[in-house]
Amino acid sequence: MSLDPRRRAAPPPPPPPPPPAEPQPDSSQVEVDGGTVEEQLSKPAADPALGEDNFKLRFCTVCASNNNRSMEAHLRLSTAKPQPYPVISFGTGSLVRLPGPSITQPNVYNFNTKSYDAMYRELEGKDARLYRANGILPMLERNRSIKWGPERWQDWRVGTPRVGRRGTAPSGEGLPDPTYATDLGAAGTESGTVDIVITCEERCWEAVVDDLLNRGSPLNRPVHVINVDIKDNHEEALVGGKAILELADALNAAAVEERRIHIEANGGVGSAWDAGHAGSREGFDARVPDIIAEWQERWPNLPALWTLAWF
Image (cartoon, rainbow, N blue to C red; front, side, top):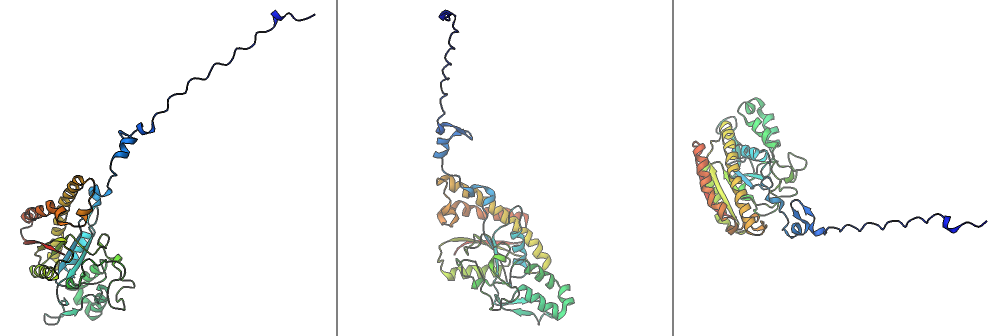
């Protein structure tokens, strides 16, 4: 008997059509940090140096023998918190002179050829009790943890990179590898230039200024030369080092502000400011005398001198 076609099961209904695809957002219109990708790409790249913590003035501290006052200031600046300053240091004397057994018997050394460590070992061998009691051995112990040995300002070749081995005696006396990189505060001074020179005695300030005039400004780069008059003893050096750090902080804060203004006015570019072009630093240069005057009110026992000179 044939099956009645009217009794056959109805075919299953066709599957429903897939839902329409959702429109994909334009990648250039995706919100990213408060703006679209297109807007973000159209903005100039952020300069990492704009951050206040990323810029530091470069300093140079100077006294007569590059042992007491300039080295205390070197230590303070190179270990400043939260971020150390780039710093180098020099002496302006013809020789390094340290107190001896009497006023007529000083210990005399040449610059650039005798390390602090060698001086320490020599004086310890001569009379450890005497040189520890008068503070010379503790001073040299501090110094040898900062850099290799005393350097003379007049021998400094401004603009010559301070990288690799320093120009010391062939024996490298005092340290096995006397390189600039081992100095505290060396990072940032590789170019061989600084922004601020701080001397610790008026005759040192005069020697620095005269030397800069005699050099004839080959780099045409401005440098502020400031004297903070500090008596040459260990106690006054400690006080002076603290005062110099306070002055450095005030100068650097102003430099950060003026550098930011310059960068914003020049489309995010700060290369001219960093290179020390005189026109780009006019705002900072104009503020330095006022900063020193305010600092002097807090440190009246440390007379200050200032001039704008040129490398």
